[in-house]
Each structure stands twice: as C-alpha cells, then as structure tokens.
Length: 75
Image 1 (tube, one colour):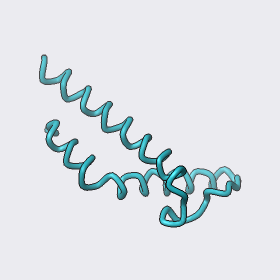
Image 2 (cartoon, helix red, strand yellow):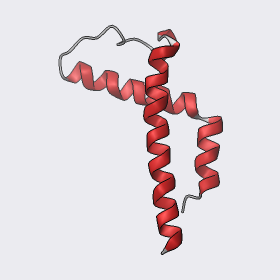
Image 3 (spheres, rainbow, N blue to C red):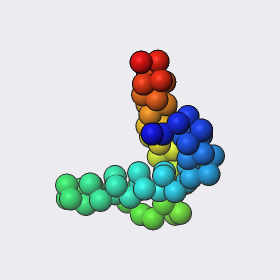
C-alpha cells in the first residue's frame, strides 16, 4: 500500500516525468479527437507557463491520493 512518504517521493523526484506523461496523454487525446493546438509539441519545447498547467494536474492527483491514504489510515 502507498504511504504519504511515497507520494512525497514522487512529488520531489518525479514531478517533471509525471508532468510530461500528463502532457503526452493530453496531446494523444487531442490527436485522436482530430484537433490541433499550439501546445501540441514535445514537453521540453513548452514554455514554463504551459508546463505549470501539467504540474498542477499532477499535484491535484497526488493530493487526491494523499487524501485517500489519510482516509484509509483512519478506518
């Protein structure tokens, strides 16, 4: 079972890798939808402002996982 320390490790050491995965999933979905967007390019070519959007998505998921961990620890 995951623990809070595992989530903190992901946050500290894997944020960019996770944010890139979020970006790539978004990009793939846009391609499947037949849409175009100026941010449909490799993660390393994005502005920091756009990368922050992916980081926020990752942070939201990590926070949700921490909430689940806390809830399960209380039961």
